[in-house]
Length: 443
Image (cartoon, rainbow, N blue to C red; front, side, top):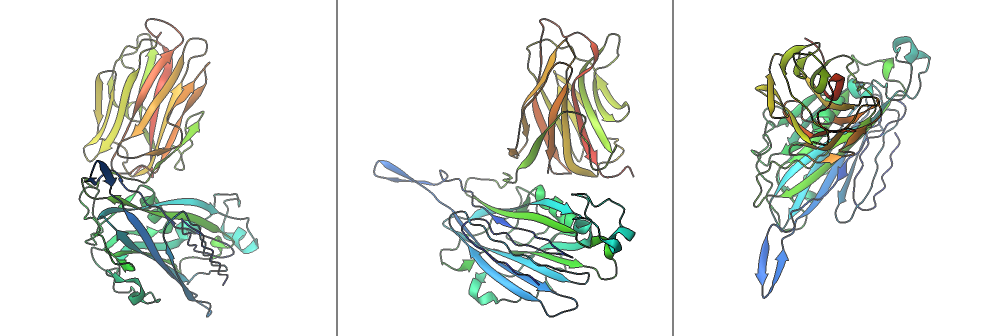
């Protein structure tokens, strides 16, 4: 086993290795509403404060050797970076990452975020090539889906020193304290949308209904339950297909001051990237969509919401140059709605709503006639990391790919504007806004 632990000041990166080479990570962040609590002192105001410290432990159990072990650490203060890596991990191996929280000065809503950064093949040796035909390219690794994982509440509040260095949570994962279980890829997908942590260890707690973590004024005391990420590579189910594969992921924790807050603010960002054509989804062809286009003369509709092709709700709208049209595409338990240009379309008979949390917004311009701009794009209750606007010019396409949205409920809004003329926009084709929502399968 290869162990490496480097700590400076801010994020803690904790790595799970695999066959060959792998690393994984966990980052720690502190967020506070510093202006939330203010006390009058003479003629000055003193802002309240919030301090988050994360204590962590890791465990690794090798299946066929004695190179097992535990690592523990403590992160506080200014930004820090640390890494922990395991090499030559094999089927049958397992481990656990445990995070405990010290919160000072104010009670806080806790959130966990995550991101799968890499899932790579690193080439294929002869044994792997016999069972793996993916080609060995970057991003084609099987490891994220070969590792079984479970995210759950563990341990009880108390002094960090009293918790010991060993992980023994065999009895911790039965019941309502489990947040998500599945492959490591599935667990990280859940974390990527933001997980509100509940001080009462309710694994099903939703944002706005989670109980805040209490503050601790005694240094070294953790508050609320700890969080454990347990992993295992099944000896019976996994074989040579994971040889040389590697994964890398981040986990981040945020504390948001609970006073005068309802717990619904999600600090885990939506990832946004620019696209210049129809989005290439991982699940090719599995999507439903919404359209707000100029259409062709004589068309009975130019607004659409539903399955492809043309199985959904329709409407009509007229467009004018230099006029901003606000739009909102939303989905929840009642289905989807698409609001634009004063019209509202609704649909709930989708081929599938097993969403991946990925939405594409694409503006399509008309060569020589007009340009299309998408601007002020927002996701309700979330910040966006990346571009929030796109301009399609001279017959080209331009848009945004939004990732890490909540799969079961989201609302994406923005503004569409036509440029390049005056008066009414001519009806000469499928130009305007096309939105696509990806799902995993069509069952």
